[in-house]
Every structure is written in structure tokens, then in C-alpha cells.
Image (cartoon, rainbow over all chains, first blue to last red; front, side, top):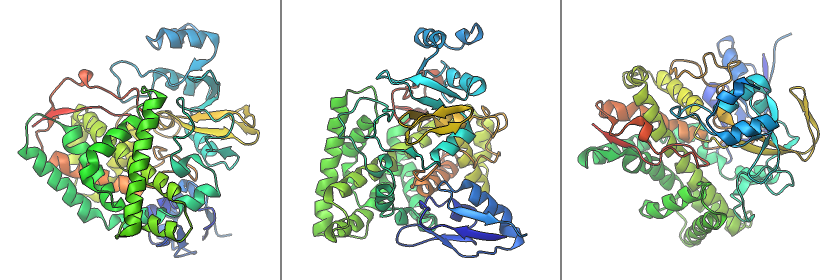
Amino acid sequence: MKVTADQNTCCGAGQCVLLAPEVFDQREEDGIVVLLDEKPPEHLRAAVREAADMCPAGAIAVHEDT
Amino acid sequence: MGEPMTITSNPAEDRAADSGILPFPMDRAAGCPFDPPPRLQAQQQEKPLVRVRLWDGSTPWLVTRHADQRALLGDPRVSADITRPGYPRSAPSNGRNNISFILMDDPEHARLRRMVTGSFAVKRVQAMRPAVQRIVDDQIDDMLAGPNPVDLVQAFALPVPSLVICELLGVPYDDHDFFQRNSSALVKQSLSVEERTAAHGALLGYLDDLMGEKLARPADDLLSSLATRVKDGELSREEAAQMGVLLLLAGHETTANMIALGTVALLEHPDQLALLRDADDPKVIAAAVEELLRYLNVTHSGRRRVALEDIEIAGEVIRAGEGIVLPNEIANRDPEVFTDPDHLDLERDARRHVAFGFGVHQCLGQPLARLELQVVYSTLYRRVPTLRLATEVEKLPYKHDGAVYGVYELPVAW
């Protein structure tokens, strides 16, 4: 799995940090997404998929391994 | 159309149903204070996109399904700009009640919103847990030391979120009578446009004065950080005061209603109350908060948008310039997403609810709301195990005329 997070689209609602704090964080100054781990390990992938689904701005994309 | 005639006891709704265009908002059924209006529920099953008639005669689209609401609220072809023609206004307005970026589009919206989102970031808010716990404990101490029975709204539900948002913004809590009264008036849609405009003007003037103080004597709070931006020319003083009004209003009014209405719902569902009271696992408490958000929907007047382009959805075409109304209380009862949706079940996974909205306008204060509700619900019923209504549930004054739903007062005893 490869994850991308678009900082231009992000609205800082924090859903991703709530669901997968090991993979996502927020910038101190404006709450915008910071991707901590673009290739999350197996046990975090379900939470990352949920974070992508729940992101209100559609800023998170998940590319499953091919 | 024989069957739907029996749905409500509201003759105006029944006549409108026959003529094909329903009025909006619709009435809740008597004796069902937690459920969406029956007409909304019927509409979700019959025709998920339909035109409704607003107070001004305009006929925007009503969207009832969870998936369609999410799709539209997340669609950049949809605008939240209240000044655009076709925007479905919820009440008359003289155009000056502009409460900042929630009624704007990007890039202006993002520019302003990003100035405050950092203060509501998940980890920053989680660090406030001990402070919020202390506020909740102190309020319960005060309540238990005072008269019994008491109005839980005034004794607890309003003070807790007001104290929290005051601390975060740097607003003196001593002014709470003033800002609570004017905030309450601003969201009360049965008041005249003059009365609501006066309430907004009073709040705006108050925040502008505070902004002046923060400019002169900056402190470690959110309003001071806005004052710094005013000084640096990033933000006008008026924009800063408008943002202050938005944050102060949204920071206490919604959460206060969740606390009071949540307490009514839990007292009416004693098995669920016991489950929450006996829970030690933070995950169980967090899940319960999501379910109460899904079930209660204090923001119940329908999110409002206007289409910027033609949008095909659910077998219809919303034309550019047409209004769209998206009530979260019906999306959150969509059986496609939530099994047995009218059932309050604190153990379900309710996280896909749209109580905070969806799209780039989704509530920026949601981490703070969650924290406050987790602390409140996990503390109040444990500290006051004999808490009960001091009136009959049917006699509670529900905020049918409020942009934010809840109860005006909640007499309780213990």
C-alpha cells in the first residue's frame, strides 16, 4: 500500500489523525495534514483505508500494491 | 398518495404533499423528539432527490440519502457562498449576518479557516483533556452543592462548553450571560430578522472590542493569534471579529445542546445509560459519543448549498444556480449505512455519520466537541448516578424553532 495526502486540498478536520495517528499528523501552524508513513505496515492499513474514506476533503489517496 | 396522508398531523404538509412540493423544514412527530420528521423519512425511501418549498417560496432540492449528501458536500461544483443567487437561505436576512468562512468558498474560505485550524488539531485538543476534566468536575461539584432540582442547561450543559471555548479563545467567562443570550438569539429562527441582526451586531461589537484589547495586550490565546495577524496585515480587524463570533458561537451552542439532549436521550434509554456509566474503556466511550452524534443531530436545519454547474445525481440533474438542502438528521438515519437506524445503540460503529457535515466545510471544532462530550458523558452519570428528569419528557421545551436543536431547559433531580 502507498498513501498520498494532498496538503492543498486538506481542510484540517483531523479525521485521519483520529483514525490512524501512526500514519497521519497535522502541522502545528494550520492543522494541515502531514504524512508520517507513506507505506504503512499491514496492521494499520484498514485504519488508513477508513481515513481515506472519511476524509471530508478527499485529500487522502490509497494505492493498493500491484 | 393515500398512505402518506396519515404520516403527519400537519394539514399544511399534507396539502403540500398532494400538490407535489413539500414545505421545508418539516415537523417532527409528536412524542418523537429524537427522530427526524416522518416526511423526511418517507422521502428517503420514496424519492431521494425532490424539490421542497422554503419560507421565501424558493424550491431548492432536498437530498436525503447519506451517499448523495456526502457526494454533493464533497463536490467542488457546489458552493457554500450565501451571497450567490439561488442559495437556499434558512431565514430572512438583511445580508449582514455573515458569520465568516462557513458561508464562503475556497480560496477565501481556506485562507481564513487555516488561520484557526491549528488550534483545533487532534493532538493539540487531546492535550486539553485534563483541563476539560477539571472544568467538568468543578461544574458538577457546584451543581451538587446547589438547589435540587435544577435546570441542567443553565447549571451544567451551557457552562461547560462556554468555559472551555472562553479559555481557548481568551474570552472572559464573566461575560457569559451576554454572549450566551445573544448566541441563543442568533440561532433562534422564530425571532425577527431585526432581533437576530441586533444579536449578531452585539456579538460583533463585543468581539471587536476584545480584538482591540488583544492588539494592545496579546496573551496566549486564539484571539491574540488573530490579533497578531491583523497587526501583520494578513487579516482585517472585521474579519478577525467575525471569526471570533463564529468560534464563540459554534464553540458553545452546539456542544451545550448535545450535552442536554444527550442526557434526555440517555435517561429515556436506561440500558444505554448504564452501559456508558459503567464503561472504563476510552474506546467504548468514544464510540458512544459517535452514536449520540449520529442519533441526535443538533444541527438539524439542513446544510445549504448552491450548484455552480449542472450536476447529475441519483437520476436527477441539479442545474447550475439551483439550491440544495442537505439535512444531516436524515442522512444519519439511512438504513443503507446504519442498520436499524432509529435505534440508539452505543455499541454500534457510527463513525460514518455526517453530524459534523462533509466536504471542506466539515466542522473544524470536531476534535474539541468529541473531547468535551467524551469527558461529560463519562463523568456526569457516574458522579450523579441517581440523575433523573424532574418533569415529564413530553413537557420538555424542545427547540423546534432553533437552527440548533435541543431543549431550552432540562429540569433534573438526583
